[in-house]
Image 1 (cartoon, rainbow, N blue to C red):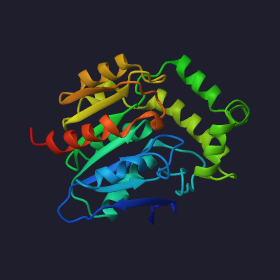
Image 2 (image 1 turned 120 degrees about the vertical axis):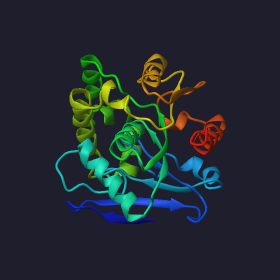
Image 3 (image 1 turned 45 degrees about the vertical axis):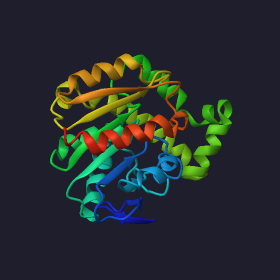
Amino acid sequence: MTEIIVDDGTKIHFESFGSKPGKPALLLLPGWLGSISVQWRPFVAELVKDFWVIMVDLRSHGRSTNTQPNLTLDNMLQDIITLIDHLQIPQLHVAGYSLGGYLGMMLALSQPRLVSTLLVHATKFYWTAETVTRMREQLEPDTMAQKAPGYADQLVKEHGARHWRELVRQVADLITLMAEKGLTEGMVRRIQIPTLFCVGDRDELVPVNEAYRLSRILPNAGLFVLPHVRHPFQTVKPIPFVPMMRHFHLTAQKS
């Protein structure tokens, strides 16, 4: 467990697993309101057999701090780039869940020679005004504490009793920014690397048809649908998810 300090003084917490020499690097990015203390961790033991695994808490999430009053995609992307530079990684595979997948696409666009393959799981790309409004209503801390006390308790454990409410508000504002000024189809079609979009067939936020539509836009992308999987990452089972990941990241670049 360790951390780096980026230009604005924010501390970015990350962890790495497995030996660096001889294994390709795999960066795992969590989703909004998630942390590496929970997300991705169930899959690490298998993934380290083939990869040097790096996991990072996004700014303001988990053990990472945020010196800014809000969250921006550009700041979060720069945090990731700074971490990769710090670790002196010339090329790596990337897998991201939800917001992590979105940042993975941004990284592939920003650093096309850095990312070898990209897996994007349960990432919301197409936003409507109605969806944004509904999400903002759901991301109201007092409402969450009342209607979903178990989830609120989990956020307290992952992000701290004094911070989780502020984080929820920051994420709600970030979603609005993503919908209004985020990536477009014209932008992501420039991603040339092998990309795999993954979605659960019961995802409440990302319908399968949206993931399919996005996968058809990129010139070198495919789609993998997980049965009996909803949007929350904890509904994803190691099998078939991890074997699919290993096969994709290890073979797609060669094909």
